[in-house]
Length: 250
Image (cartoon, rainbow, N blue to C red; front, top):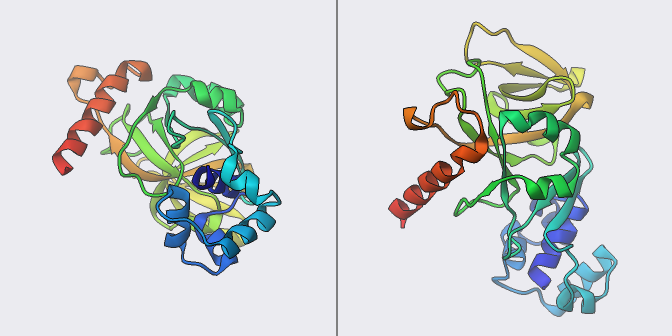
């Protein structure tokens, strides 16, 4: 239980692996190995984990502290993130289509809602929490409307890199996929479309609910028309693409 308990307790405190590793003066890769169950901490480090997370060593190594198929992550900068895990207690990659956008904006902090979203498996993902979002419109051409953007959750605004692309979640603008520049002196972000016919605009940091950094995307040909925006009808095709790519790499 230790590996999954450490991962859960870290996310519950809203800490990245790097932040927790720095607190313990250990390499991030070492903490990553602990959380994957590849190595185990020595007794002294185990006691420090127990004191840091305010739970007994016995509970850390013997009991399932994470809650069935639901977990919580809390970040000082980015509110609360609800996530779900699979039968092997690995984070799922949930998918949000355009028709589910309104529901997502209302319920993205509800673990029951997140658990019921459709999911896919993506092999060999780096550490982090990932989610897929269907985009629509032509503001980010040449990326097609109907593409699925696989993105990694950002725990802090300081992790944003200028001129990279992100999914920005806010109550006023909904889900938007844009290129981003920080304007921290004015406590805002500048959102830029790759299609120059769309003008840049700003969004206040306080209005942002979530930020997801682009990791990869999946586009669809005529066989699955981009006009068909029901995500459930694309799940098989998405998983097939992922499996084909994975098989070519192994």
